[in-house]
Image 1 (tube, rainbow, N blue to C red):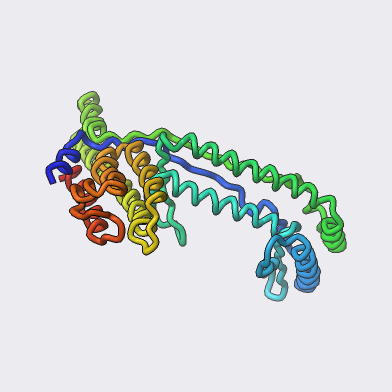
Image 2: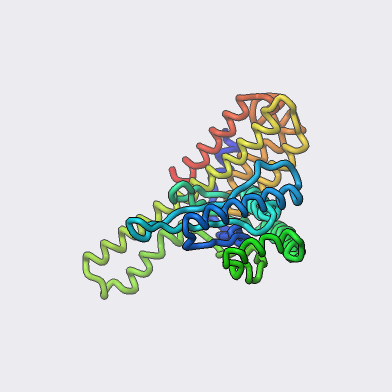
Length: 342
């Protein structure tokens, strides 16, 4: 395809955007932990807390839930002595659920607005890298403000609950076991915080940076140290390539999701396909992958309403429900990677 090759033969990819890290408050902020309980006290207190939870959750429930409980574990002091720890929330579970909902909504939005690069495995979790395109930064900040407003409302609900009979009941239960002091704290949920670092990965900078430094300090390095700099340069080049490919693969996953949802589905949805493809096109262009925006996503956008463009780009009068279009898109993305690093 001459047109595709012409679009791909461009300057090297310079990835840019904001490296985003967010910190969300969890439901742990609405819990208390009672330590060093003797087994009998542990069991008695646990039963009273469980009864209280059932009553308060029934009164404050928003929708049917599976219920909740307290957590406990034991610790051996000596061969014949063991103490236990009890952990629970002295608030209705509906308040903790607000925090779970906020965290879930936030990460849905992050995946929508950012390019998500799969990171290293940390236990059961993967430490993903989030690159926020500059074009989406304003909308993301507005969204964070809406979540902070939900947290403000949650804090009001927390304060109101502390004045209720149910709050007094749990206070009296803990007073009975001489641990009510654990409730004597400022119960307030902080806003979501975030860190952003401007990111720009230019292959020319990667290629020349170490070489320039080596020229400046060459007379201060022995042969082994100079070889170390060469290894560093090769490592930087490999990391650049891996990051670009991961970014392209992330956009490819989003694109395949849009096609599966709106273009290949039995129920066709041209309007939403157009909206989401345009959002993805803007994201790709903003982070430095103009070639993907112009050679892969734009042809799909043009083909939605123009059969002639569908024929020109994909050899079919419509892109909807055509598996060959999906295959062609994936082939173009593979060609893009080959062109960048070939």
